[in-house]
Image (cartoon, rainbow, N blue to C red; front, side, top):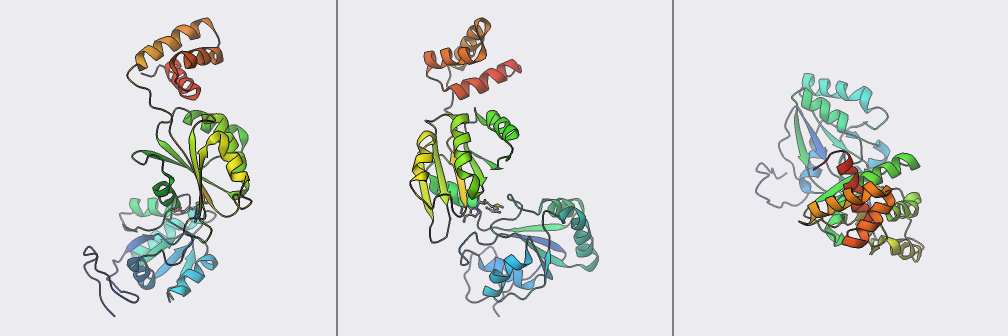
Length: 301
Ligand code: SAM
């Protein structure tokens, strides 16, 4: 079999390649998020040659491994056992000079998936950790959403309980970067509703569904219309979705003036009325003003 020693050359080989495996080491390997073909040759080679693969769910990963003829032993590392087993795996890798690969059910491990405790333990033990890049739903969604990509923030899954959820959204009201959320299909509509309440009906948003799969679909609309746009497609809440929301408009150099207006008006009336008045006078969105007023009250600059 062809040896790929210089992995930086970008050389393309055919068949399942082999390469030199570092020992001891942890390889963090991204796997497809829908299309089995979305995996690199290096990832396949590593999965085929490490001493064992730590899977979020060994049964879930079986079809992928079989598809690529990978017969490496698998063991489970998931959110329910990671705290108990991570340190033991790290010790074992060091003592036996072994290498393992970490994979999750789909995409990049640790990104809203297990693996953090293992990687942290490996870092603390001075073990080599090697990332094998590949699919990640948030990056794929951002790359096609048509929202600004120069600065963005990944918020993962919002809390499901109403209180913590609205508290999180309240903190994000003045966020100027594009925001990216993961969501479970059965909560999609409710979450779009919460986002609209928090960020206002005019804020641009995008839902990207079933990335890399047969029914990949992108829905683009301001938050106030997004629910109706999604409701028009009976399949919209099926499968997997990423939600992206444009950041709040950036306040310009008249910030000091707006701050002063907020402070003066707020001295004479309640917070809600103050924000409404300043919003009407300046054209700045109420959510951004709300966030700014909170900052000023906290003594922010
Ligand atoms: N580790 C994964 C990654 O790198 O993207 C994410 C795992 S997280 C448990 C699962 C969430 O990712 C889903 O609820 C959905 O929000 C998003 N997701 C995963 N695959 C997707 C796909 N093919 N299309 C759209 N969203 C996807």
